[in-house]
Image 1 (cartoon, rainbow, N blue to C red):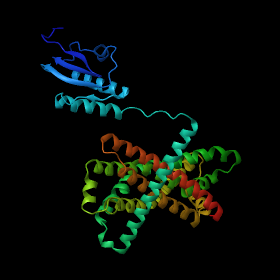
Image 2 (cartoon, helix red, strand yellow):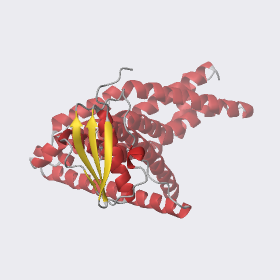
Image 3 (tube, helix red, strand yellow):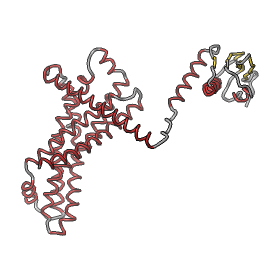
Image 4 (tube, rainbow, N blue to C red):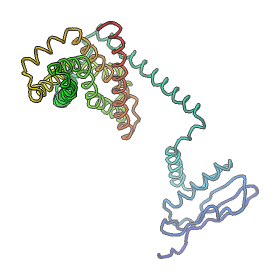
Length: 373
């Protein structure tokens, strides 16, 4: 290592109750630098003043030294004057302090009561935000009914293609495999009692009442809900939403409502399509494994399925579509203005959408049982 003619140095002199530190020399990361603890020594001043001496040139090593002095002063509760230093040094030291403070992990709560209280407060805050957003969407939808010409039908049709037609392949594969799985699982038990034909009842009822709507909702939450959050999050990061608000255009009317209506309309169609593919998967198992003719399978399924089973699946699918769209758009509008924030918003949209689907399905199960559906 080649030594520099004027190495970095820091000279400390007590001036009353303040410690004046003069910085000089050439500051390089590859060369030795003075340590603040050694420069300070045993002194316990009531203030520190940093002054430039003969500074030949400097790099981030000087910024790090200034940051160390400022941090020590903050911890000691004494002032640190850096006005005499070059402006770039002060600016970079401030940025370094802000960056390190932003990445400091939050302190762990002291007790379980504190943890429960913070969690309950967070859940209540998110519930209020969700309810408020649902109210805004409801008012916006009412405005569309009064003034339909102001609605962006072109955007709605484009979103219907993205969340409907473009989702058909993954919904087809998932639903067909779900029907296969239900048929294989039912066959294991029904064979023991000689009731192989009843596999059509299991697959039909399960697909129409539960699996068709639920599996389609989960697939759409992972596909379309995340897409909504990422799109709106990118727009918020690029300040496009701020520009709309500045022009007096509500983001809910312009961005959220077309997506909400598109997914609400397409979810029942996707769910009915998923029901058909699931029944087809069960029919394949019945004909190949249980030696049940397709005609007998179809007749048995028609004997057990009625309009109430179909209507319950349609009601669930419409509700799931609304919940997924609201969760995706809400997380997108709540996104932080960074690339990492967009990723977190997309992840949060998927988790929120699936959670709402499961909760709503449980509520529907109790409600339909009470109503006798």
